[in-house]
Image 1 (cartoon, rainbow, N blue to C red):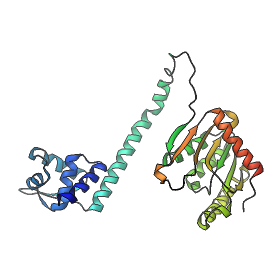
Image 2 (image 1 turned 30 degrees about the vertical axis):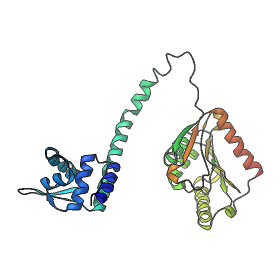
Image 3 (image 1 turned 90 degrees about the vertical axis):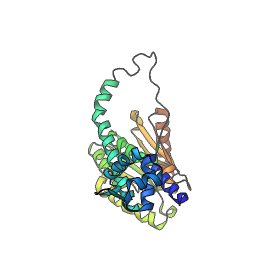
Length: 278
């Protein structure tokens, strides 16, 4: 049975428990309700540590304690354990984000007083900064929020529109003009084509004359270019068929040459390859 318990222990460690916690919980899942000394003997966790480990697992909502002499312990179900670990991780992430956000303004103000003050050269603008595709959505929102003049968007069907619509509406209220190139219907499957058409109607309804939308046969690079004539920024990713979503990366750049190059590519496709939405 140890051969079946070991993978469960490893998975519990991958999900955030330390080795003793994972050993204790995986063996308790196998044993059912029992006392601490039995768990210690079965799992190899020392007697001196087992009560503290069980107490920690109980506080995490992974173990139930039935008081008595001796007290008896039993594990939650696999579903309950998974949900409790997910909740704990979410709470920890929110707490960590809250701490970072609380110091953000103070850090920026303080760090700006020393950044490159001892150097004899100006800071070079990095060519690219890579982020995961999941993080790229939040970076896209930031670019929209800081847009001053124009936003150029290259997309397949703009499936992420609900997550960025408010930022686009705010940009329009500041006088920002938006141009969007989407993929032609004949290059999309039926589901994506319907979603694209729904998003076009949503954009036109919410942004009205501040948005122009055209279609092209292929969109090899997706992303956005913001304020290319005002030393703006860009975010882009390329089509990677067969590569799982979690492994894909997006590139962010504020390098003037790269931003202008991407804007020029957009303009060429807009002028010579695009058509009204089909």
